[in-house]
Image (tube, rainbow, N blue to C red):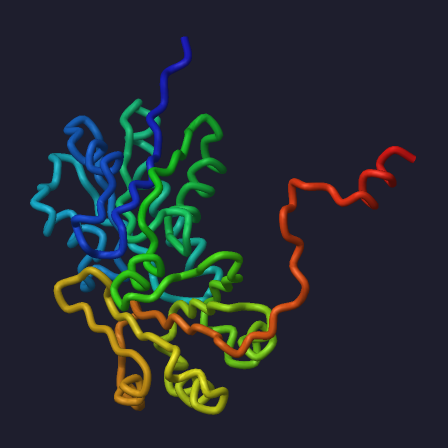
Length: 265
């Protein structure tokens, strides 16, 4: 008889405000028969995901584990970390217990859950790795500063800022909104670029959205950040009022006579 395996479930918690935990995630967190796991950069760094559920008034179940995911671009170090984390959760999963992996933001958006899920499936293909969707950081950030992420047929680019301002130059003509993630390492370069492109007045900085120490700055106030160190959980929302839009197809469900004739040929 085949033993039922547990599921590794990515539980999205939203960007920081406990009120943004979805009903589905809240229901999952009420379970006492599931193991909680939660990520941190090191043993000395608190888990932001765990902090969200703690501020929501939830307590750790009897079985839980901290999983380390170092902040590095070293592929070998990352692979070792993912494998160690997978080795930690596999005994529970193979014994039939569900494991909840707590994720700030949304588990499908720049999250560590995807790496862990792939590693676990590689080690044991029987294990399912579903995701409970959540509020992502840039949607919450736009709500924080009172600007829409998009309107009508606006185009949006979500870009890790590590690609640099040269990548942003290429994207700018085609997008109405740029969401720049992980801006900490090149913040001063981004401020220079925003000034040079006359985009500062339409830009918004959001740090640790939804946390007790959330900070937002907009327009010229962003220049206060020059030379400072900001949280890893910081992003920029840049609106591009100067974008020239090309021809757009309207009423896409309505075929033009030319298209209809061509279809019958």
